[in-house]
Image (cartoon, rainbow, N blue to C red):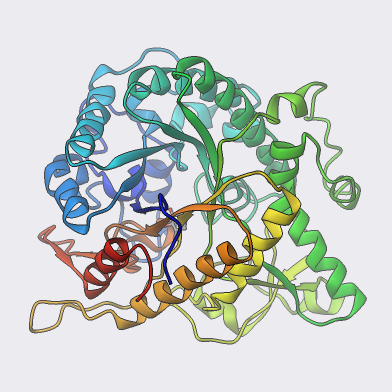
Length: 468
Ligand code: IFM
């Protein structure tokens, strides 16, 4: 199963999940620093104050990428390191850290792919309303200009956002991510301001980058299936598809919101935060669309009986497989339990759904090149007495999903690359340090890195440009 020549193989991480050093060299606090220190927010009570201590271990971690023969490395820049208060003065020490990282990658022949926002909003901006405040979008564009100007001479591809779905819905509706707000209206407002920030940020990047610079965004697109073929469930699935996928894809790639979504949710919001001209601002040319994919989504209509049966809020807890849960951002749909096999996140493993998703995105938006910017799985890894992590389940997961990408390419979808999530175990947001997604095991007591079996296996995939 060979991939097209020039196909890019890489791994991905995010600043807050690996860097640690949260108080060093002038970095300001982010919403995740605050959230992780609030009692009860993080499942295992851990924080990311140290995480993988990547901030102090760049040479070692770039060495791991080089030994993997990774062709590209997708990482995010921490806004609070660059502009500690969110707007205003630039912190030269923060810029210098990413300068060093980019140079270290380039020295080893690894192309950096830089994400500007992977959820770590500077806390002072949250104090002013965070993503519910339109001004945050303008501040993001200022930050994009700074990073584009600083790194654009060496970094070809920039992505404005990682998974705005999570930032908006998990942060402002479900409340299980920072800033921990619960309210569907706030989440929809946040979605629009994230979209607006993407448009303003993409425009700022275009001005700051040389003509060869590429602009992207990464979305965690959902493959939504109705729980039954009843008209109610089919309609609810369509609604969640609008709320998860088209609320981002349509304004970014077509310059409009789906009318049916605007109509469906008028009882929650009047959409008055969408100003004249916003959609034109959001609709900027994209060089590549990043797609993150892990698991399918099963949706049922939120009938009064089913709603009454729900006693807990939406959560990504594996125990959610025992019953339906409210779907973040709407009161019209429920996320339904799915059969296994599951990863340690309780997420159903069904690689063929990735092929279906990619074919659908390509059909709806022909001409937009796609890149798998994240795919991977958490399992309960253990270091064996022989000092190795035998993670056959992760290899099987990656094998299945890489095969699914290949199947999409065979059906004519223009997929340019694949980034495994993640290079190393890291701070898994509300799950803290309790879920391991890495190709490399991290001992959080000693910070020793141990490549897992999947690391060696993935090195073979990269060397062969495909699956044996
Ligand atoms: O760890 C996260 C990452 O930050 C964003 N995408 C999903 C991953 C696994 O949950």
